[in-house]
Amino acid sequence: MDVTIFGSGYVGLVTGVCLAEVGNNVLCIDIDPKKIELLNSGGVPIFEPGLEELIKSNREAGRLRFSTDAEAGVKHGLFQFIAVGTPPDEDGSADLQYVLAVAKSVAEHMDSYRILVDKSTVPVGTADKVAKVVRDTLAKRGVDTEFDVVSNPEFLKEGAAIEDFMRPDRIIVGTDNPRTGELLRALYAPFNRSHDRLMMMDIKSAELTKYAANAMLATKISFMNELSNIAEAVGADIEKVRVGIGSDPRIGYQFIYPGCGYGGSCFPKDVRALEQTARGLGYEPQLLHAVEAVNFRQKEVLFDKIKAHFGGDLTGKTIAVWGLSFKPNTDDMREASSRVLMESLWDAGAKVRAFDPVAMDETTRIYGERPDLDLAPDAMSALEEADALVIVTEWAQFRSPNFQSIKDKLKHPVIFDGRNAIDGRLASSAGLSYYSIGRLPLIPD
Ligand code: UDX
Picture 1: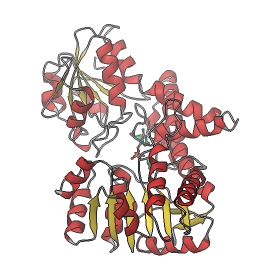
Picture 2: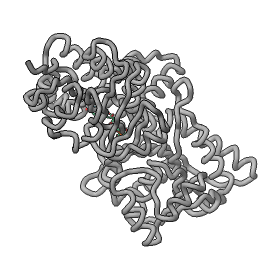
Picture 3: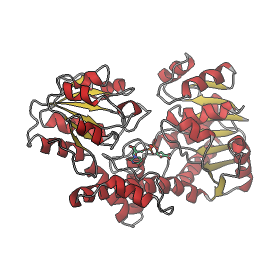
Picture 4: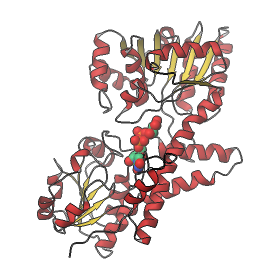
């Protein structure tokens, strides 16, 4: 089938490449000529495991092309995917200008039936707005042709996006037109093999499903983070509590890991956007508000522990930071806990020596060169001249470090583990003080 994807960002690229991989003829459109040039010369603007290889093989097979030509895009595909960004407005609600601009551009160039598929995470009611823009633009042009708008939210985890697309838990198709629904079913058939994972529903329910999923997952994390603070206060071990409650299948083991807060492009933004949607409709969403507030506070927990350990004064201290991306296997630093920590450290007069396996360029892009930030070439070099070590992102390579070398390198033998990622008993028996989340610190005699 012929498919056009508007937006060659994270979601658009993954969608495009996976649809091409199963044999569709995919044209990806982006307004950024630099991005398209890069993609056309074999480069990939983002880091996502497996993406580069798939782009390469599908381009070579002629099933995947990139262009800035919106008109060619509209002419090409029966399916017109909208996978552009919906950045938060100042009040946290999603900014729809890019989504609606794509809708307008599709309507400006279409002469026959097209299906506009909303992949971007958009507030409930956006499909109606997209349909209105298309209708108005077609009317202005005096063109009388049919179209449909479908809500088809993505559920891709960064770092596992290709796998999530190829083997989805569910495929949500929101449509008011059963015939269009069947066309989407055909498009998704290769990803819907072992049993039927495609759920057809009305458009608004599909739009809300995406927010509901992310809000529920964020709630699980904030709940555990709140519990971790209570565990510390009462002298319990949150990791034991986690296993204790996870064994109840109604609760489950997944997504109940305490830590120094959730980040990324989805949870923070989507929880806030849903909150705004509800508020805009006159409903005050108390739970969503609390989920966000707990997360905000949780991102400060590491700084508070470091400050307390050093008697309230961090002036002139150098803190080694391992892990800068918001989670392992991505270079994405949007809403990353590392940023809150580093900015607090800088405000307190401390220096940072940081290492991340892939997010170093991103760190430089965000912060530029600054005297209080050194980027180390590897994890152990980050400890040179450092007073303490903080683990913010649980990259696999940080999980089993040489504790003796850490102790020898640090000026003060102390580790703050924001993800409960390492074995604190080993750290402590090597003579390091060990602070983690939701457990009492281990301080050697
Ligand atoms: C998320 C959803 O998982 C995905 O389905 C949706 O489509 C987009 O948003 P992503 O943002 O890529 O995906 O990351 P995810 O792996 O879900 O992690 C989000 C954040 O939560 C990370 O900062 C992670 O460290 C944190 N987290 C996750 C916890 O603190 N504890 C957990 O138990 C799980």
